[in-house]
Each structure stands twice: as structure tokens, then as C-alpha cells.
Length: 316
Image 1 (cartoon, rainbow, N blue to C red):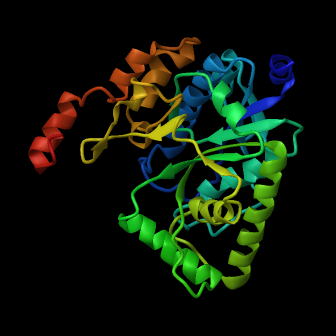
Image 2 (cartoon, helix red, strand yellow):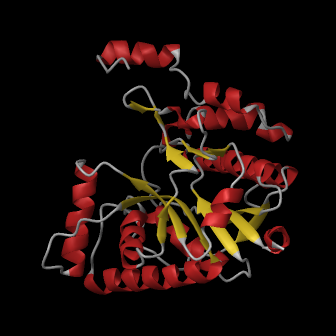
């Protein structure tokens, strides 16, 4: 009976992507080719998600028409990925705000939460899915899965807490569990409750003229704090790997007791476009070991070694 229930559940994995001329997209990408880098990464993310989770609907959720997405729309269809058009009509800030486009993730979440799926997930475009999310779907029943970070000594964490304290008017400094905005999974009812909290926070930000330096993660973290009895860690299923020459943080969880989702922000303009050109456009997917090599998980490139030598960077 339990297996029958799982089979009948409607699940969607969404990769949100928005674009507007002149609207800022954030960091970890080259400004010159930002749209192409994000779209190529999104194709890699979606194709790999569908390959390893064939029973799920996988969709690029975007404010761009399918006609304007060509040739990427053809590549997505080649891998069985759907395109869902959703307007960017919520969570909007000024175009020059650094994280303006990142808030589309919350807009897309509100949209897909009303499409009749039993459970839903979204993640950033700069990921590679190397395994099934079946266990995660089981764990998110009645809960939200988010990627938490353990380091509470970093500057970014304290900036987030200070901004939350100021925004809420708390008489005591807020010290939250910090969650990244790259992964969200929940059943539909819990997701809708989360979006209600998120939209209420956004409305107050607009009313107060409050701007955060932390982008969509500010809203996500405050909403998660208000629903912390429902939030669980997603660290068993996703991890954020830093693979660039300047800062490298690559634990063995990509291959030893491997997580299903590899989040690799530095690979938007390196490894993921290579995977797109060599495999995804051909309707193929590489072996996971090939992904690890191309995306610099199991070693740095000669070019990166040269950069480290020139700039005297850590030789880890």
C-alpha cells in the first residue's frame, strides 16, 4: 500500500529562472554572459534531475516565453523536461538591486504550489543531480527540507542576524539556524503555508522600505524561523561545493555516501557549460565520475594551479 501511495504521488522538481533586461542577477557569474551561463546550467540541472528521477515532473519555471528560450527549449524537451511560464509579478525590487532576479525563486514557489502537485522541490540552476531524491520525498512529508550551514562565526551569518533583528524589532539579537536558498522541498500544504509567511515578510519589507543585503535568503530564513517546527536539514541530499581557485571547499560527500544534488556555484562559468556542450545538447548524460572531473571536485586544473601560484593563494 505504501509503495502504491508513492507511485500515485505527483511530484515536481522545478528550476526557476527569470530574466529582464537591466535587472541585476547577483554574484558568482560573469556579467557579460550571465543569461547564457544560467540557461546552460539550468539545462544541465534539469536534464540530470529528470534522468535520476524519471517519475517526477521536472520543469524550468521561467518568465521567458518558450519561443524566446530557443535553442534551450529544444534541449530541455530532448530530455523530457517541461517548460512552465510563470510571470515575475511578486517579490519585485528595484532593477539595480544586486539580488533582484534571485527573488523569482519565491515567486515560482508560490506558482507551482498551486498546480496540484502533492510534493514539490526547487533548486538553483548551478547544480548537478547525480542520484535519486526518493528518500528526500519521504522525509519531507509534513516538513520542509532546507540546506543548513553550521558555521556561525562567518561575517555573512552575523550580517543576516543583525538585519533580521533590525527588521523584526526584536529586543534580543536574533541567532537563527542559517539556511541557503538553493534547495527547497516540501509537501504542497506545508509549502503553501511557507509562501504565506514569505509573502507577509515581503509586504512588510515594502511597507517599511527595508532592503536586505542577503537577497531571497533573508525572506527564506525568517519564514523558516517562524516555521522551525516544520523545518528539517537537507544536508543528506545536497551540499554546496566551492571549486574555484581562490577558495576551495570540497568534502568527500560528492562520492563517499554521496549526496544526490551537487551545488557548485563556481561551475556556472566553468564545468556546467562544458557538460552542456559535450553531453546535454546531444541528449546524453555523462558518468558521475566524469562530472566530478569536469567540475573540479576531485582535483584542481592546471590553470587554477597557475592562478594560485601567481596570486599566492592557499595550495589546498
